[in-house]
Amino acid sequence: MTNSEEVEVLAQMLECVGIGEEYLGTVKVFPPQPYFTAAIAADLTASTNFVRLFLGQELPATVSKVIWLDSDIIVQKDITELWEMLSVSGDTWTVAAVELQATWKDLEFTLGGRTYNNSLRFQSAFHLRYPSRKISEIELSRRAFNAGVLLLNLDHLRAKESYLMEEMLWWSKRNSEQEVLWGGGSQPLANLLALISPAGDYQHLPTTWNVLRGDTLNDTQEWNSERGILHWTILGDRSKPWRHDLRQQSIGLWLPYGLPVMECYRLLKLPEK
Image (cartoon, rainbow, N blue to C red; front, side, top):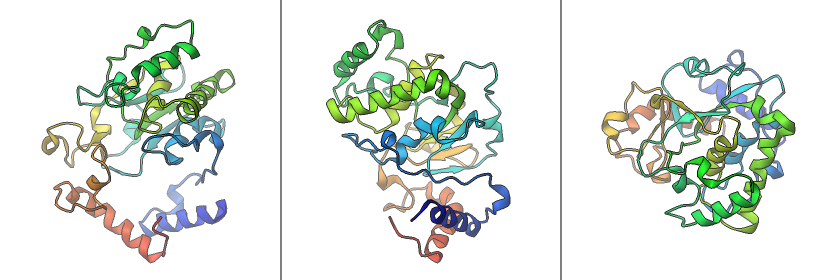
């Protein structure tokens, strides 16, 4: 389909689920770009996982801040509160996200350590790219974040001739074309973006704005209707409510939103993939 046809289908879908055009700004379909379609030798390789890292180029210069939301979430509270937490003017943050709760999900793990056993490769590539910096500066023992819910300062991404986005491109190509530094698609890149940004870290958001399914051992307490954003992740496709396992208790939180979407999908006769 062309971009205009995709926009029309999206508009029909939104209207079907009760979101009229009067509630929308500009619906934009992102055409494939070489900088976010690099094939990563890992999971989460779909090009849409990389769009968020290049929104500074894809969106108009008048847009200074964005909220990125993955598609496997439910927003249960007004995200105006989330939007207004951080202003762009006079602020030094580049990336804002929710810290992962599991104690072992630190930056070293995310950037190729432990599970993938590529920590030394990453550190070597870091020294190659930034010979004047020491790897110890970025404190790999700090907790990483999940990139499914992000606030991004686009002014920072565009600064100095889009320096930070060029860095994302370098690391993406390094991982896909020369050596495997990490798995997880764009998740490690998003964390790295925060580290090499002017802020040197990510701005921590309250945990209620990205409660991950499977992130802690206390899902029954954390996973409830009082949270701002619920996120089906970590456990793979089988944990998604629209997939295989209908026994999970959390499906009751998804049904009021998910069933109308599925019904509209069938009504509009959209392709399954």
